[in-house]
Length: 99
Image 1 (cartoon, one colour):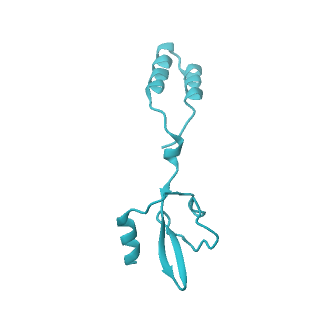
Image 2: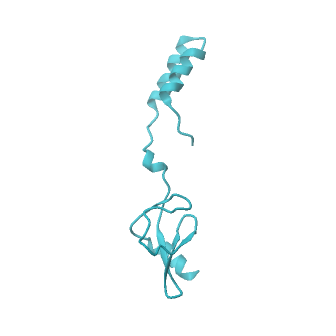
Image 3: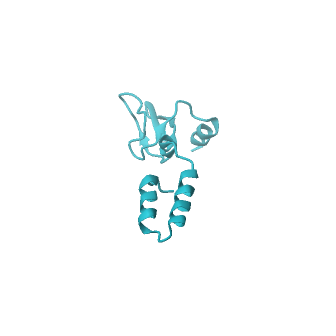
């Protein structure tokens, strides 16, 4: 999927269609399309905690990158940008515990 500027597309149709009826039809099709919530495009993940040496380390459930985070827990993964949820689903934590 590629987000586009629908208003610019409608203007472009008007300039490039020879038949006005075709341009109007194309504009109506665009107008009927649902809008996308920008937040739905942001990946989401969870920090998976695992014991490490004398402390705990955290892994991103999306990209698997490891972060110790000694000064607090990040709200996002610095590696892939995934926004972190509060709770880790049981199936994800069980999978991490087995690795």
